[in-house]
Length: 252
Image 1 (cartoon, rainbow, N blue to C red):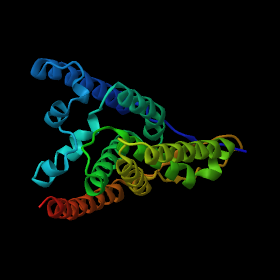
Image 2 (tube, rainbow, N blue to C red):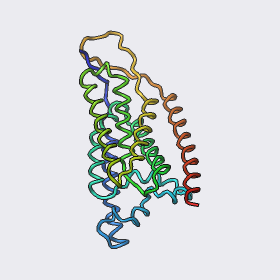
Image 3 (cartoon, helix red, strand yellow):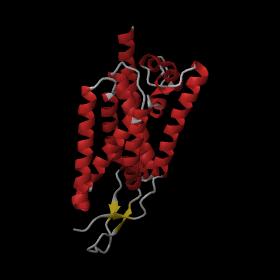
Image 4 (tube, helix red, strand yellow):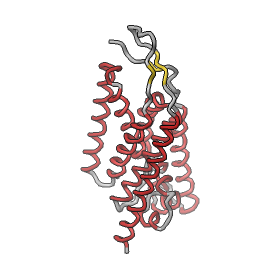
């Protein structure tokens, strides 16, 4: 069968930048931990994590909302970092290629925030990591390949099955072991899928259908995308105020 071919797929520049940022922050935490507290594994030191902006429920409830964002770039221990770098490197180029740089950033950040918010709402433990955002990328891939599954044939089905398998394994693994922020994963997955659904590329049909893979022009729908993102951010803000009420009432 003919396979869909997208004109000018975006190179993964943002993905590479995110990989670098995560490593730089990790190294900074180690240096800071050593200088400030005399410890060599600063990334696993609670004080360093607090200073760098990990997700700490009470601090967020008292107004440090930015922690929902900063926690996405912190990793606890080198295994945690490597796992997320590997996943980001595997999924990022695909999402960035199909959705483009700007929408990729929107999906990544909003999925990460949704993951942080879900964790804030349902998990009392301090947490950090890009896992929510990474799960959001998996959600975006699922949405894309479900929408265009006819165009990709067997390869598309294989990618879909892979995504579902990876997510399934991760969730089972997460529910069976302590210290994994499953709410962050689920929140990120749902957030990424919902954002991606509204940001899905729509292609104008080529005038002449060629038997082999033809390049597709994408329709510009910037305003629709902008409205979708604004509505989503509004939902996050609402979720934040509800979660804060519940965190404060539990603490108080």
